[in-house]
Amino acid sequence: MTRFHLHPESHLVGRIGWLRAAVLGANDGIVSTASLIVGVAAAAATQHDILIAGVAGLVAGAMSMAAGEYVSVSSQSDTEKADLARERKELSENVKFEQEELAEIYVKRGLEPSLARQVAQQLMAKDALTAHARDELGISEITTARPVQAAFTSAATFAVGAAMPVLMVLVSPPKALVLVVSVASLGFLALLGAIGARAGGANVLRATARVTFWGALAMALTAGIGKVFGTVV
Figure (cartoon, rainbow, N blue to C red):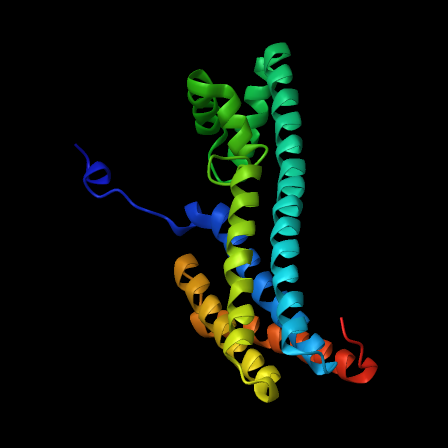
């Protein structure tokens, strides 16, 4: 048994499918719901009205995220399937040309032509479509589109993220509601940025600062709009 079997490696890129959807959903849940709450509160609405707006934003946002993710990732999946179908047809019609095409890809990556042809021949002998999908089309098991996974992940994390500022409405004194929701939401965003960075192996400080900045900007803009127009939603 080789050392590679004794010490299998676990790469963070394997998390990219669900991690992207999770971070997007949670971030959008906090930012959009907190911004909605702050904007409505700045318009001098009652605490009851603010709570209704927050809950409505949570439900509508979660459903919107699920539908949006499913549709967009399904489009990616349809494109991948169309490319694979085209590649399967080309392999059935002219396997020799496809082998040379694959070998040329390996030559461009630095292999000697003779070795590139040998590698292409052996890979295609095992699974020609997988070899072309990975090296010609850039489609692999890690990066392949998963619409249902993306939809459920985004909806669930949006709901969790949106619940945070909604809960702050329940525990905040009416006169300090905007301040409490804003500060708490920025704290939630900073925590989300740190967790997402740790899960993805990225720089924690940079990710935290990035997500906190855009969240603060969104809340500031909606608070300003609510203050200027004074419209109770």
